[in-house]
Length: 157
Image: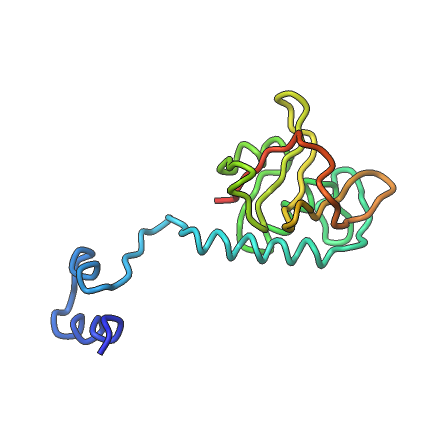
């Protein structure tokens, strides 16, 4: 019998158990409000899929979906549908994320384009140096290669 199967019978016999007891027998301890890396990855993956599903949607300044988007409107919409709350602008979203290095980036992380210390654009990392984003007036949501080294990466918590 594995530890996973022993936990319910121990809880039944004991009535309650402390977090230390659960940890000692291989149980899972959950901390309210603390997202695990796996949960963050699952939200990011879902947000990436939602952004990709908006391929071809037209850019409109200030729009946050469901049919038209600006850059931060697309990321806001995708993460909201994936169960995560983001602020409205690219700069606010940057300040809301956990900053990570290029070597740590994963699919679903946010990619922030900057000039000096000012963030001016955001997209969702799709892997292999590409992002899903809503580029500019006259364009549509699409996947595109990252065109500059002037980017920072952030992970939605």
